[in-house]
Length: 176
Image 1: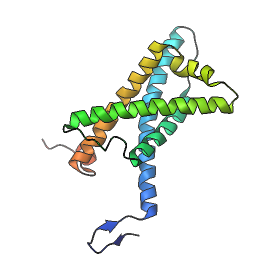
Image 2: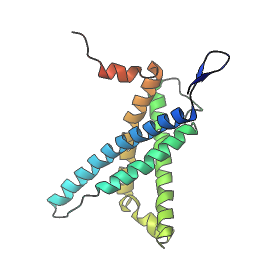
Image 3: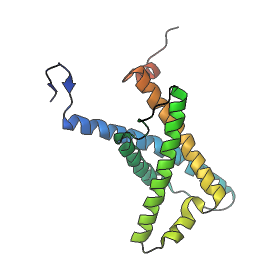
Image 4: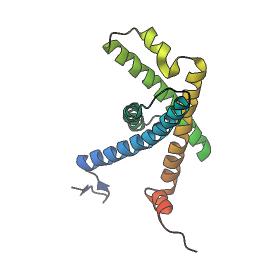
């Protein structure tokens, strides 16, 4: 139920906030899954051409759900909101870079912890991250950045226009 305070402003309930957060989480995770799924599809097509069978769509879903939660928590902690650049483009780029670094660090920590659970040494896990070679690590990092840029562009433009206005603009018919 919504209640109002003395100033007439509407307060959302805990259930409404939880529902909104769940919708954001599912939207972020779905976006990441589509991106990761496309990359895995591309990798599988290249490997199949070389005679190697590969299709880890479950991995794409698991990564999307994990990274989606990391992003949601980072938003809740207001990471990247403390020092806003004066230009929207710089803000998009800044947050994309910041979240890319954050996701890389948190993914490494996650992989090391999963490795520990499976009885593996941290250095062995670190050698296998993103393919294990510097070019593969850099390529993976660049791909994460390229995934973050449209996400933050949508998010920041939407915030600038006002809640729901960008979605309305994208969904409504244009007049002739």
